[in-house]
Amino acid sequence: MPEVSIITPCYNSAKYLQETIDSVLKQSFQDWEWIITDDCSSDHSIEIITKNSDSRIKLLKTKKNNGAGSARNSSLTEAKGRFITFLDADDFWEPNFLQEMISFMKTENAELAYSNYARCDENLQPKIADFIADKDVTFDNLLKTCRLSLLSSMYDSTRIGKEFFPEKSKREDHVMWLNLLKKVPIGKPLQKTMAKYRMHEASVSRKKTNIMKDQYLVYKDFMGFSIAKSLYYTANWALNGFLKYSKIFN
Image (cartoon, rainbow, N blue to C red; front, side, top):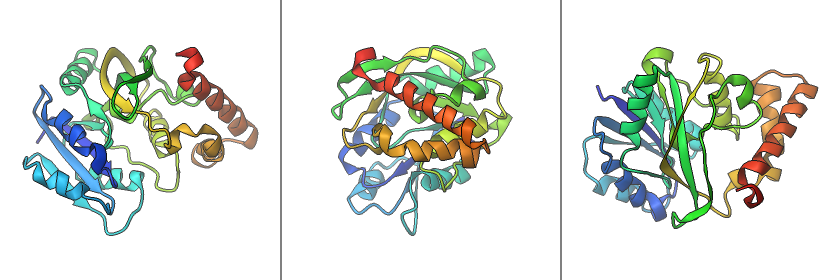
C-alpha cells in the first residue's frame, strides 16, 4: 500500500491543472497514490489527467455534479495510504512537501499536522504575506478561525481513521476539521512554506460576507451549539477572517 494518499476534486480545472500535476510528479517523496475525482467537468480536465500516464494517478468520474466535498469523499473512500492529504486542482506543492510533512509527523508522533503556505495571485506570484503555522491547533481554537488549509495539512488515517466531508454544508472543510479534532487532541505546526494557494479574485471562499450564514450553520447545525453560542463564534470567525486576509495586516 502507498504511504500517502492525495485527495483531489476536479471541476473545470483545465487552466491550472497541469501545473498542479507537475508539482505532484516532482515530489521528492514518491510512495504515493493520487485519487482525483472529476465532478462532471465540461472542459478538457479529464484529457489533461489521462495524458499524464502514471499508474499512481487514479481517476474517478461522478455521474452528476455534487460539489467538492462529495468528490473528495469519493476519493477518500478509495484511499489506501496511511497518511491523508489534500490538494485542489489549481494549487501547488513545493517538491519537498510530502517528504517534509511525513518526516515531521513521524518525528513528532503527530496524528495531524499543518504547514505554512504562500498566498499567491493566479500566476502563483506572492499576493499577501505567507500564512504561518504558528500554534498548535485544537478543537477550541479552530472554532474561532480555520487555521487548517487543505493543501498544507496531513493526518494519519491508520491511527484515527478517515474523516469524511459533510455533503450538506458549504463550509465542509471547516466542519471536517472540527469533527477530526474531536478525536485528535492537537494538530502540530511545521513552520516551513511548502505550498502555494491561488487567491482567485472571484473565489467564493474569499467573499466572507456571502458566507456568514453558512458559517453560522457550521456551529448551529453541525456542532449543535445554541443560537447565542453560534452567533458568538460566527462573529469571531468573521473578525479573524478579516485579519487573516486583509493587506493591512499582511
